[in-house]
Amino acid sequence: MPVYRAPVDDYRFLFHEFLELEKHRDLPHFGELSPDLIDDVLANAAKFCEEVLQPINQSGDEEGCHFENGVVRTPEGFKQAYQAYCEAGWGGLAAPSEFGGAGLPAMITMAVSEMATSSNQSFAMYPGLTSAAYSALIATGAPWMKEHIVPRMISGEWAGTMCLTEPGCGTDLRLMKTRAVEQPDGTYRMNGTKIFISGGDQDLTDNIIHMAIAKIPDENGQIRDDLSTVNFFMVPKFLVKEDGTMGARNGVNTGGIEKKMGIKGQATCVLNFDDAVAWRLGPKPTPGEKKSTSAGMAGMVGMMNAARLGVGVQGIATGEVAYQNALAYVHERRVGRALTGAAEPDKPADLLIVHPDVKRMLLHCRSFVEGARALAMWTTLNMSIARSGRPDSDTAGLISDLMTPVIKAFFTDMGFEAANLAMQCYGGHGYIRDNGVEQFVRDGRINLIYEGANGVQAMDLVGRKLGRKGGAAPLALFQMIVNWIGENDGDALKPFSKPLARGLDTLQQATMWLAQHGLANPNDAGAAASDYLRLMGIVLVGWMWARMARLAQEKLAANPPNAGFYKDKLTAAKYWMERMIPECPMLLERMSAGSATIMEVA
Ligand SMILES: Cc1cc2nc3c(=O)[nH]c(=O)nc-3n(C[C@H](O)[C@H](O)[C@H](O)COP(=O)(O)OP(=O)(O)OC[C@H]3O[C@@H](n4cnc5c(N)ncnc54)[C@H](O)[C@@H]3O)c2cc1C
Image (cartoon, rainbow, N blue to C red; front, side):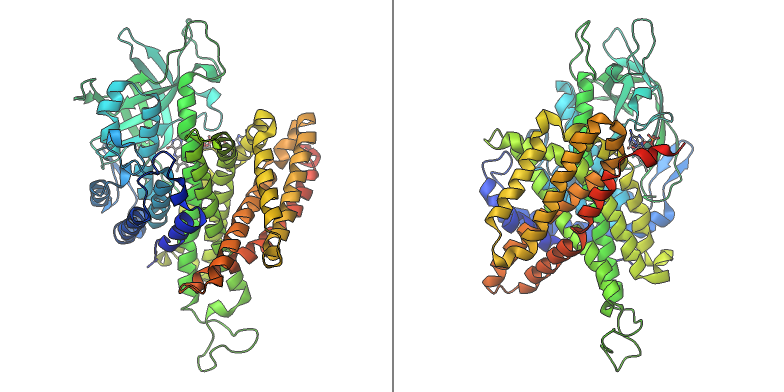
């Protein structure tokens, strides 16, 4: 049976010692955030995830979802777990209190979401999508929707989805065929097919609020292949009247559920919109107004950016649970002898943990998970600062915007890498289903694809985020790291600040290379994008590790009772510097090869 213990100590370290949330009481939603409150939320979330969600993860994978007579059924136990989830109020943690939420900062939700995903990714996605959907409705919906629909989503009574993908378009939304035609009463009728819709139908809630995009035809009834006609709509499964009462079943019909590689407890649906009543969200474009995207689409993009950070955290969650299981296994399984002589001569063989290559695999997972967690939380803190109007809010906004594709793509790549390494620690037993570790590989694989495939994230970083406002975001970020290195180059920190400086220098060279070559030949930028994103991810996680190493050294100087915790931090930090930073020059060399050979392929 797989095991899972929520990383509560690590989150307490990050919130109280590393980010010192106490010092950010001036930020919105941080005022009431006492250390005791944070610890309470973390401890209760850990208990819920370990005792309720994790025990139905493997069985949910074995059973999967069912689709019979047009009705979707989730695996045994999901319904009860969902009720318990709602009763405990987990769905509304970060939601504003005026709508019935707890109004806590987003980073607390991120922490809980990581725990829920490690415990049971299929389950965690149902409420995860609901919170993305109600956030978008709060941002773009009409007052009656905020009064009657949002609170029911926050409480978990109703769920939400994101409906973008169609058979002919996933990445390229210009090609969308779903159309919505305005009616005399101001509502729209939507027709088309959406595929791969997570939680598109289920038996957990009485209603589902679909957040869908569709094109509005022009005056000739034609739809064009451009984004300016794409608008954002709310389409409930059961109609909701403006006074909040429920109406008839809407024309949203489930065409089926996908048979897929992983997250089998999550219903991935084909949804047919057959004259479905839809409400357009966001301000109506004025006649003659020409924009590259509609105002409603901006709401959709906001929802997707938040969801992308959430998917990055799913990568951490995959790495964490896979690592924990591998760690337990290598302390049970006996194979061979330690290279320097038997560790336990009285036993027929030593434990797997004695082998350097096994330790390497484990440390790779651990240094990724803990370093990435620090970067995710630091970025989420920056998002809160960005919305605060504080003097540092502009810079914080630029940085969190830059970080979004890096976190989405680098963390999901690395989380999947970690799950694979964890499986490797099991040998052949990892390939066998009963042991459970192969489920993490299968479940974690989707994270690299949905919410914008990782290659597309890399293009977003290189093509849009990097150059925005004259490159202000990378300039600000690089300067912060330069300053930190300048202030922390004493002997004790040299093992961290020196490799970090090397990594940063390489990242700056790579950024310059992109600026010089990307405009002259866009294929050079396209061919370099994924390597550049990884390079940036390695350096930024490296910066987090250098900062955590400094903190660990300070703490150890005071001989704390939990010295082992800080010593482990130093080891994981050294691993990142010795084993990950050396990838940087290799990535730059690969980028510098340009696109000629790649583009030679017919
Ligand atoms: C289990 C599951 C759940 C999902 N949940 C949802 C959901 O809830 N809602 C929803 O709307 N969608 C959902 N999706 C759809 C998912 O977001 C899309 O599959 C994804 O965005 C990729 O689109 P596509 O499959 O059409 O691939 P395509 O767009 O055909 O792209 C194929 C590949 O080509 C590459 N590529 C494409 N364009 C570019 C480019 N410009 N530059 C570089 N490389 C490129 C990428 O590597 C990409 O992986 C889900 C999918 C799955 C499998």
